[in-house]
Length: 347
Ligand code: XIL
Image (cartoon, rainbow, N blue to C red):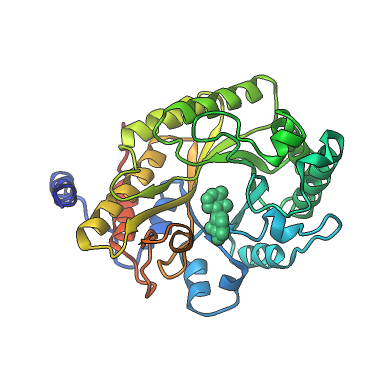
C-alpha cells in the first residue's frame, strides 16, 4: 500500500517541480515511446489476427509482435520431415500489413520440442537436424523477421548449462552452431540469446555474461541479449538502477538489449494497491530501458489479462498485463504513458 502511495506522491512531485503537462489524452503509449526512440511489442497467437477487438488492439498499440508459440519446434516442425508454417505465416503477414516488426521466437530451447527430437540421435545427426531447422526457418523469413531468439534459456537457475536434448546430444558447442547457422541463413537479422530472471544479477546472470563474453570473444555472431522479465508483485522487479547496472555490463560486451517477455503477475484476486505496485514494476522496466541507449524494444508477453500464459502455468496468479479483461488500459499502461512522456530515466 505505502509503496503505491509513495510512488504517486513522487510522480506528483515530479509534475509539480518540472511544471510538465500531462500527455494528450489520445496519445498511445506506443507513440510516446516512439518519441523516445523505443518500440513496444507484444506476443501474439495467430488467432489474434483474424479480426475483432483483440486484432484491433494489437494493430493499434504495438510496433513489434512475437509469435508466442507459432515458431516453436513442436508447432512448426512437428515431425522430422514435416513443417507447418500456417500460424507463423499468418502472424508475419499480419505484422507486415500493420507495419510491425517481428521477433522470431525461438530456434533452440529445452521446452516445447517434438518427441522425435532425442539426444540419442547422436551428435552428427542432431547437428544436421539443427542446421536444417534453423536454415529452413530463418531462411523462410529472411528479411521479414528482424530479430531472432536463437537460443532460449540455456543456463539453469544455478548458473550451470542446462541439461537439454541439445547439450546431451551435441555438447556445449550447440549454442555457437545455432548462432552461426542463423547468421548464414539471414545475415541481416539480429541474433539474440534470451533468458529469464537475469535482471537482478546473481549466479545465473554471471553465467549468462560469461557465456556471451566467450561467444563474442570468438566472433560467434550474437548481437543481443533478451531479458524475458517475467516478474511478480511485489517481489521480482529490481530497482531501476540495478536493472541498468545489469544492462550495462552486457552492453559493454557490444550487445543490444531487448526486454522480450515482460509481464508482472499478481496473486489473484488482485487489488488496487497491487495494481499500483504492478504499475511501478512496469515503470521500472521502462525507465531502465530508457536509461540505456542500446535498449530500444520492450515486448510484453501478451496484452490482456483475459488471455495470458500466467493463468495456465501458475494457478492462482494472473492479471499481469497492460490491459484488463475488458481490454481497458490498466494503471500500468497509464504509468507507461507518463514514463515515456517525461522520458523518466537515470542520468
Ligand atoms: C509460453 C507460452 O506463453 C505458453 O502459451 C506455452 O504453453 C509455454 O510457453 N519463456 C519463454 C516463452 O521463452 O516461450 C514461454 O511461453 C514463457 C516463458
